Each structure stands twice: as structure tokens, then as C-alpha cells.
Length: 467
Image (cartoon, rainbow, N blue to C red):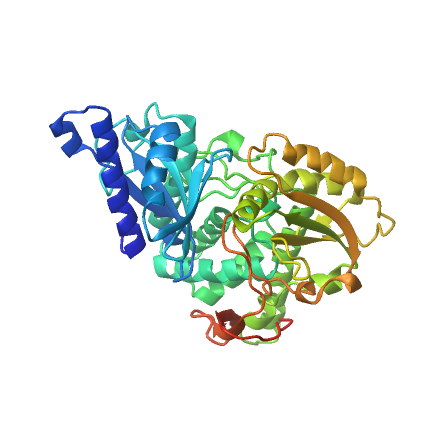
């Protein structure tokens, strides 16, 4: 655990576990033996994070430390009292319950898993199935991301190449608007497995060759045949076709299960189109004997020229903290809205980027989703709003915010939303409000030095470039 924040968080949860053991009237020997740990996953676990990356970390605790009382109350209060931790929220209703907070300015997601042991060592082997015997379903779901990360790192033939490829593919997916599981696109674990599969098939290839092969592989992939890493274990017959998902991707750890997916007909169409686009560009470059053109392949997706109409999703709340909770809740129901729009439009492109209406004083977040060009007569969105409102207001126990849907023309988009993907700044639920008025310094990829990836913020004002 090289990161200072992770080490600090580890010390906090070890002290927390011993406190809970003391509250349970354990003996001195039991308290001394009690321990918990922190396991990072996502970009941190795979070694593809940067200094500003959010941290996905799993708290693994002993058998007596419950999630309802000891995690969400006792540990929550300990974290809340720490000066380096702020904006802490409990997200209890998600598929994987967790705490979200800011740690020294970095966003942290912290779910919890409870093992049937007293001492959870720092380097606990969660790939050992004997340790996972009789754990509850919530703990199993919380552990799945970490287990998948650790298994991928063991299966790729060249770790450095894999990490470089994955960094580039995450950049590509974000710039082309196909990154974000809640919006029905590819999440981090999906991209990691897809990248690892290509690396396994070409163990001696260069990073550029692997990226090119990524596009050629998945542009021609016979979905819904699952993508499965080679792990030396025989595949079952029923694994050959998995029809529950548009793009089945199997987790690389036993017992085998598929990555959770929100892919719909629309998002599947767009992801495949982006695979085909990347493949076509690379094929043309090879024909002309030209070098790999990162600038063209990672060019931001031109929403404002591809679509003439958009669904505007306006979310607001009385204050910033409540807005974070409200946005997180609504986003967790985005697949429901996307399916409703597909039913009346046939196609909808749910741009994952988040924007702020600067002309409104109340805290807000705005999304603009591209609509099917061939159905320009769709203007009556009130029934969709009524149905979606019932979905999001049912079961929400926080202070309700507002949600408004409307249809806007591309020409009506505000200046800060006449966008290419990657030109806005994503706000994670429960985090600080976006500031679109700061001067920014251009930054370039560490792995493709000539490729512009975005801006570093500083004080002052500046206009936002188109790409």
C-alpha cells in the first residue's frame, strides 16, 4: 500500500476494528489479535491511476463488525471526526453499499466486506475461496471488484504494457463518450478485461500494436459470445453464449460470474460503432503506411454536430451536499430513463458528461442526451418525465431535489455545453460543484506525449476550446 492516503486509511480501520472488539467486550488477547485492512481496486488497484484519481478502496473487517452498526455508524463517526476527511456520505441503497468522502482533496468510495475471521491481515488473500466461506451477499459483491483486479494482474503476460494500454483505452472511452457504467457504457472493469484479453493474445506486441489489435478484435467480435480471459481452467458449455447481456464479459475469478452491465440497445450500437471507427482508422493507416495517429483516434465525440436534438436532464437541490446525494440517486436510475427513451425514440445517446447551468443560482447538474435524428417529431416528453419521476422518487429517503426533462435543439445549447466529449468536467456524486470559470493549463499524455488530454486548473478566466 504505497499511497499515503491508503496507509493512513489502513491505520484508521485497524484502530476501528479494535474499538469495535472492545465494545463487544472481547478479551485483551482478542483485541490485540483483531485487525482489518484496506484493499484498493479500480485504477489504483490496477496501477493506472494518476495523482488526481479517485480512490476505490474496500474495507475488509472481522466477523463481529457489522455493516449496519459498526461500519455505517462507528467507522462513519471516526472518519467524520478526522480533519483530513470531509463531505462524508453513507450510500446504503446502492447495489454495493458504501461510504463516500473526500480525503485530503481526493474522492474516495469505501464499501465494506465482512470475513468470518478475527484477524484480517494487511495482505489478505481474497482469491482464497476458503476465506470467503459463508460470507453474506453484500460482502461478496463488495469483494468482486478487488478479486477481479488481482486476478487480471496475475493473468496478463506483460504488466507494464497492459497498464499503458488500459490508460490509453480509458482516455479513448472518455473522449468518445463510451465510458460510464451508469449510463450504459463500459466501466473500468469491462475495459480492464477487454484490454487483458488482447494482451494475452499478443504477449510480445508493442503498446501501439495492442491498441490497434483491441479495435480489430472487438469490431469483429461475435457478440453475445462472452469475452473470457485465458486462465487455464476449462470453460463450461453454457459459457459459449450468454444471452442475458448485449456484451457479456466474464469476471476472471472463480466462481465465475459476469461483470454487471447496464448496456442497452442504444449504447451497444454506439460502443460497436466506436470499435469499428477505431478499427477502420487503424486499417487505413496501415494501408498508407502511416504512423499511429492518436489525435484522430482519441478525438472527442462531436455530439453537437451528430445530433440536432437533445433531452436536457436538469437536476437541482437546495445545497451542494444534497445535490451530490440527489445526482447519485438519479444516475443510479439512468438505465430506466434510457429504456423509456429508447421505447419512444428507438435510439438515444446518453452523453456521460455533466454540466452546470451558470444562469441559475441554485446548485444544479445538467445532462444532454442525443436523440435519434430520424424521429424529429418527438417533442412531447411529459409522459416520460412522469414515469421517470415515479421511479426516482419512490424509495429515496434524502431531501428530494428537482428533476426536469425537456427537449432542446443543438442551436439552443448554452456555450459551455456546445461540447465535444472530454471538454466538460465530470462531477462525482457527493463531490464539490463544478467550476467552469477557472483558467486551465494544457496537459499531455504521459504515454502518448504528443497527444493533448485536457487541462490543469488554476486561477483566472479563460474560454473553453472545442477539442
